[in-house]
Image (cartoon, rainbow, N blue to C red):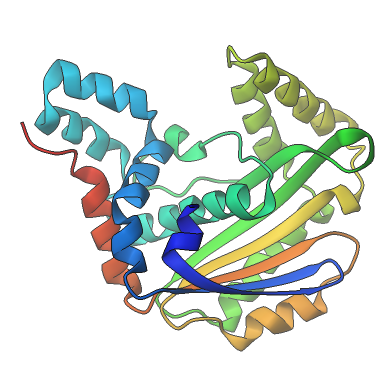
Length: 260
């Protein structure tokens, strides 16, 4: 069963191309997914097989130290990163598009926020299986309010609602470096789109993803109602009452690789 199905109860409302999703932790849900989520967090900072190689060569303690150097150590940095990680997993589980590059592996500094779109979903769909994109903005707050929602929507609307060229080119180039021919083909399509800009708005969906301690603020639904209808819009909230403790616990689990 997928991570979100095990972790949370959800409500999903749809009005034409507008989707409003809310998630609340189930009793025992966090304990059920804790180890799997810890592994997922690791995978966003490094390849799991590379971490396993470190363990084989250097032991658990040194391998954990290598991994820790890639992960943020500040509460703010961890909150922001975990928002992106949870959003990425939801896109792949709930929408069916891939998020083909784990961009947190490429951070300039572990406590620094990356520039550009928070996450980009990509794949092929619709008639003739043409390129389809999703532009995403993730927010993780102990207390979610209107100003955060407004800020996220402004980012999504930038560049006429298109994925920013630098973000799209970053993903394209990572895919073109892959040894997988399917990755190369998608990378070529994305790189072409940077130059040609042929995708219409109805093939570039938007997701405003939030995880917060106070649950879905009224501004989320108001924001969705005010959006246009020319693309699929997803507005999402994950309610985690002990928001900061949850983040600290998940990163502690991700950094713990075991014992010698």
